[in-house]
Image (cartoon, rainbow, N blue to C red):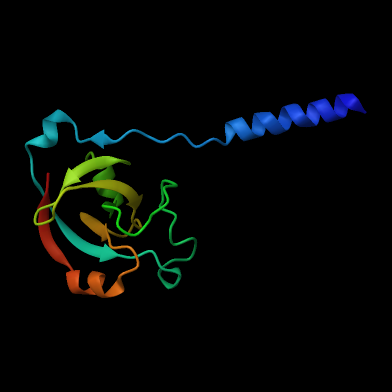
Amino acid sequence: MIHYRLLLLFFSILLLTACVNEAKPVRVIPEYSKWKEMSVTASAYNSLHHQTSGNPALAAWGDTLKPGMKTIAVSRDLIGMGLDHNTRIKIEGLDGYYLVKDKMNRRWKNKIDIYMGVNVEKAREWGKKQLKYT
């Protein structure tokens, strides 16, 4: 009976250590593309239940979104161009840097969504724009 308890304890510890989510480091766009500006369509999105089929605060790479974070979602074609998870970019007309934390549906191309927490009005005011990022 003790052997079963030890086995159960061992596998429980093994399972818990396997589930630890290590934070990925911030990724900066590679040197060869830092000088190059890219033009994209930019819209805004929120983390609200009625805007998603799952947990609205959970991004595609498993990050938890919180209002006030400077994050974006990217169309999947931009991932292959260097905008991978945790890539830090500067967006024309906005202060500071933004981190790539979310992916958009496969139907979107050459597009980013700027995260605006739960402020739907702010996202609507932003609308859709053509802008550049570096």
